[in-house]
Image 1 (tube, rainbow, N blue to C red):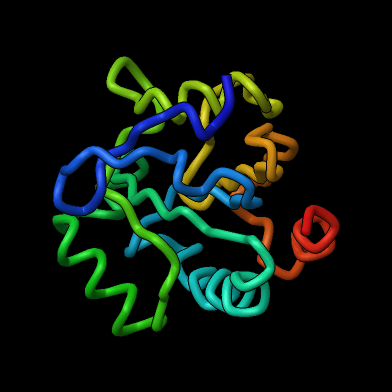
Image 2: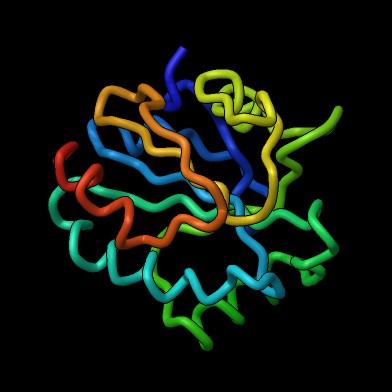
Length: 157
């Protein structure tokens, strides 16, 4: 399996295929609007602006599983991100990343790249880097800033 084999829900709960991103490098991030790491949106947007025309996408999956830090609905989360951080990368519907209701995409990502906690996602802003062939090649901790990932992303492009 590859990342491109999955379907996810968009902000309107419609199913969309990740096949549309085939041939692009991806950074897949579970996010929250009320987290201490929320300011990372700024660095992520800078990365996206710099590399989006070179075959790079950031896929944003809001998640409310960690400290109730993404309490709004999909529309509220999207508006917050656009107004506060001027984000332009794709944002999807809110999901679970751990537990029995974890989204199948995240089940796959976690099994492909485990952390010191095993397959569990530790917190918001855990990042998975995917190459242009749909293979998960790196996992970054929530504390990892956009600038720290840039060289790995550039190498994929």
